Image (cartoon, rainbow, N blue to C red; front, side):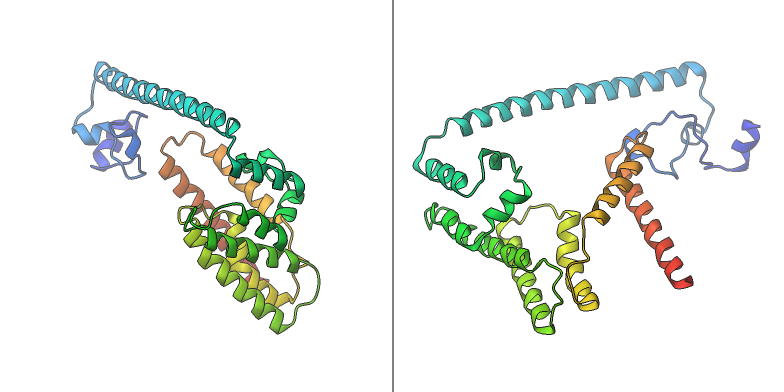
Amino acid sequence: MYFLLHQLSENHPLCLFVRFHFDDYQYDEQCIECQKNASPSFSARRDILLILRDTLLEQIRQDETMLVAVAAERETLDCSVDSLEGEVRKKLEELLKSIGCDLRTWYQQLTDNQARSLLREENIQKLLDIFPPDASINIQPMKIVMLSLSKLMSCANNKVKSDEEIEELERVLDNFVTNLKLAQPNATVTSKLHILTAHLIPFLKKHRTWGSITEQGVEHLHAIINGLNRRLASVLNTRFKASLVVKALSNYNFIFDVKSILV
């Protein structure tokens, strides 16, 4: 049967789980028979597997070395942060304590209440006044980002919005996006940030209120992605795995859109 399948197609997709280019795996990749134009012996297959094994072990060794180096760098950074005794550090600590925040801010672990306190307009100004004006070119854009978030936070309620209020929120969001790109050009666009910047205004124009928005949808999306990651655990190529996740989410969107049209 296998011989017949091989004769039926010069580039059949059948593969005996042994590949030459493991990192470049694609569905249309040729199997060993097609690549070699022959059927390798069991000894030859064993040699190929040994080569793949040695390659993977070497990659694991390199990753372990990098992990050790990163851990050492993290420990050095922690020691440096803990040992800082400059005036700016002292003023920052005092301010954070006075507004209900603590040193966990070094690890980007602000709680909801801490974020709400930090984004008060008066606290934003106090925070930025600690740093010298020429400390960074990103201070002014970051100030606008924080003030924009403060405005958005104040408007995140169940009040029915007028056209003027929605237009004002749209201007605030535009300023937020523009200055965030300046202050953090390499920042990752999270799902919540995407929802805020791309979908909030259309939602407000349609429903006239912000009060119906919850994080349940985002958390549900996290659950779907986690399930896809578990299902695709055997896919070792990170880029290919990410493309499969995106395709699956696109299929979910297509099914939802078709269902909405039919209903």
